[in-house]
Image (cartoon, rainbow, N blue to C red; front, side, top):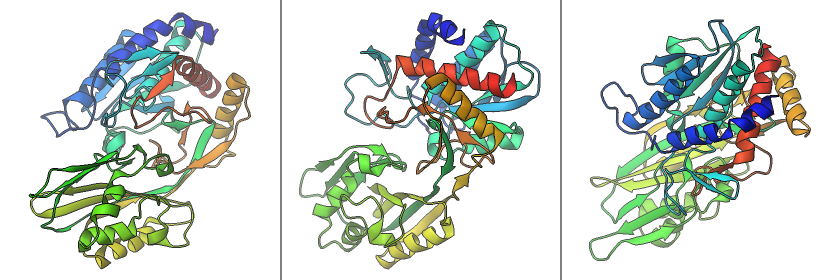
Length: 415
């Protein structure tokens, strides 16, 4: 019944996803009432307008986030997704902000992370409403606008509104992510009078490009391959590639080249025998006679950010850098035996026919700091969606399947 409804409304779903993809909702400078710039706010406005058109009760929390309630019943479940995206980068086969349908794929920035899943959550709720499936407990969809840059949206939302007792986010992968590594982001700098360097765009991605130039030559561009910072083995770091060539004889650069050898992503040169770590030098830029850098580190459940931060900051100071900030989050864990998690696993098995299981990842999902929260979708095992890279996509089939799974989860938990 649910699947049939979604099939009959799939063109409507794809059309609305195209509207959202068309908005380049990358964080920008605050603009008046818009804390993350106009474009993330525009994406939120479009989503809340559509939710209202479908008969849901909407609320805009000062342009940080918004919500849509199934009805006036106090919500017992929240599905948390985000409408902001990472910058497009280079290498796309088509315009990243024009949804392209090809060979069963929906290609565009945000299709997988996280606009596609956000649309799936909306149509899951729409299916339940239009099919007159009764719910005993309330359901709330929450749409944020700053997940890719620190989740200040969710912090603000939680200052204004309480989260329901059950929360899942389609900001990860199936079956259920109940464990997430700790995360540390380190920003550092030092006085510097050398060649101009411009590498990386965001701290949570392997940098695809890095250029270096001085007054006597044109810029030299080093190219790599972007990947999410939690899976750096899938990328090729352009900054470390540049340092491996250009760092010789220049103390600051040479020091970084030794801490971050090109091709090393497990932090062994910094952390030695501590296993389960990923470490990415993701930003390196010069501004006004100063060199600025940024590092993204993911560390295992048994370690703490104080321990890991102490090691990396000590190493950076040894080679001449000052620490501008060193912050992050401790590892996150939700009991896999809880009824909430077990219910989600049952739904996954029912819809897919595959065995459900809990997994731990290096990425930090949107529920990392939400006690009892888990990630449930949106990617399926062994599926590659080019997340945070060129030609990001979700298949038409998997967008529909996500909506079906979310609808069944709502019924299982709140019906």
